[in-house]
Length: 270
Length: 315
Image (cartoon, rainbow over all chains, first blue to last red; front, side, top):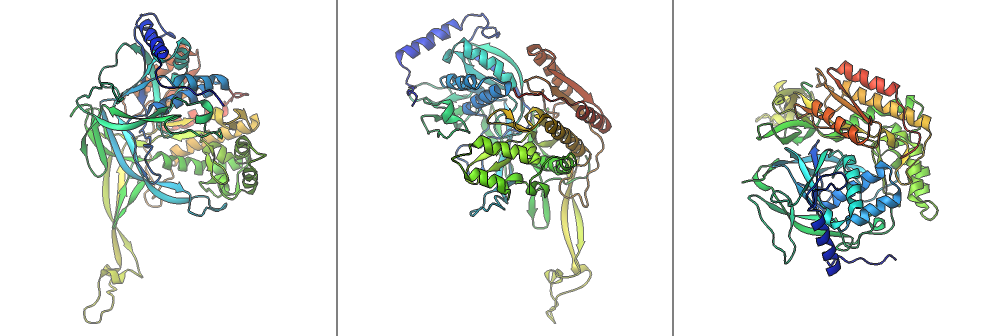
């Protein structure tokens, strides 16, 4: 049984994070990315229509999030690490060190969600070896993003080794969310402050800013006790809600401006 | 691609609804445009792939031979027996059998849910195939189906005799069917190195020769998909393929080959720019080649197929 980690920011951890943030204010490059800034920004272009079902969605009615979640982004990095050919121990370590790293997303200023019906394969109530699935139809949503994404990683939540690993893994990320939701990595930069336009978690007791246009979604993330074994698809261990996988109410900086029977249009300004 | 109806969403009354998606055009305005789902294009590719795999002497499960989308998961007894014995057979052994015993499952993927959940992820991925809003149009056309029997009563009955009207006009069913014409943006990703790779152990479950044969069949199937997009309604609305332009990006390193949406006019130059940037990370890992016609695209895929040299060991 591995020792339990705690997410509660102990004074030591807060002090370490603050000291790390101060050191990142230096313009010296971290993992080859020039500073200053605690936030590592990865620029990506959405290549195809994006889709990532909300965690509350059913198989029949698959509503999509408009942006990827921190959980999905971190998992994409771990998946990329495997594809690069890192040893399993390094991939597991990357996942473990990503637990304390905050991730924010800046979507492009315009996104249109298409509401559609697609054919799916669905398990029947009584599956048989000869007929494991039946053909069915389901509601699905896909998102067209006009522009580029920025994924921001708080380097104050990790050390130089983690920064180096992120800089190595992120260019290998090929898709996010549903398969076929391709993205293309374009480059890195760093920033001191994210400002408006990024997703912002609503944390009890903390201030938060609301921009000109917004909506709220539950985005998932690695929980405080997440381990590689618990989050691995190929492991017998199960991930537990709020401990290994958390859901945070998050302000998405895109507001619904128009909708119809087949679409919902989001913009960064009303 | 002109006058096609490769992918419909449903039917309302006597009117078939083609699939439409909403995008934002270069001017920042929302536009509704015809699209074909990636699922449809993958199905088209797999239909071309299965006979090519059979010709190449690669094993196929009985369901895959019949083009069943469930592939090895449907009725393949050795897999069911193996999966049932959870105590002695780890998931990696199940995955190895899925990859080894059915080349179609290896390349196109399948999800086993009987006794345990083991998923083989597809080697080939398609995004949505979306029309360029400025150049794509969809129209509804009126058709008549001549039905000599069974539909007469639906057009009314004679008031005096109460018998169904059986005039020629009464035996004609009207229906509306869409046809779309335009320029479509297709993105496709092939992870050739994953052919034969057991995703759990990260080791190859099939030999180098078989992997080469499967990869060649996959490239040939992609070429066939461009020439003959065998989607819906082809009995009377076989699409007119007018031309094809694009760019192929190939990665010989662990970096993914760059890919950008052809909805952007400058996509070819951007892909080349990304390749240059990625080659600074790993030298000479990526090369790109533009093509300006269907024949050039096929020639390129044929050359890639002939010169294919897959890595001997998994990364």
